[in-house]
Image (cartoon, rainbow, N blue to C red; front, side, top):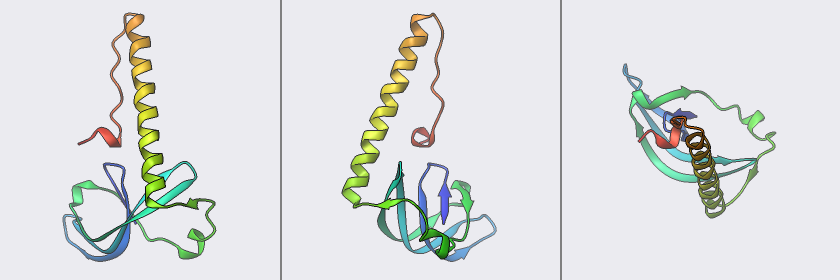
Length: 116
């Protein structure tokens, strides 16, 4: 499993790594989490530049089966992700308006979705 700087989680078979932590994953899936639900999107062979890797680890299959997450279809998880992003944007706009009304400058924190 690889967690990237932009917030994505990739799961696959590690086929290659070099001195710069560049990775090649085989049979890769991108796992999207929203609340207690998740969905998997097949990505195939994935080459990852080392500077984008935040965390790399091995998945314990025995513990993964015991998780309380519900697997849903790709369409459902993408829709849930879109709704969640819209909700966050609305909250940021409300915070900015609230701060502006009080004469303060508001700068939103940079999150994984805003990095690129």
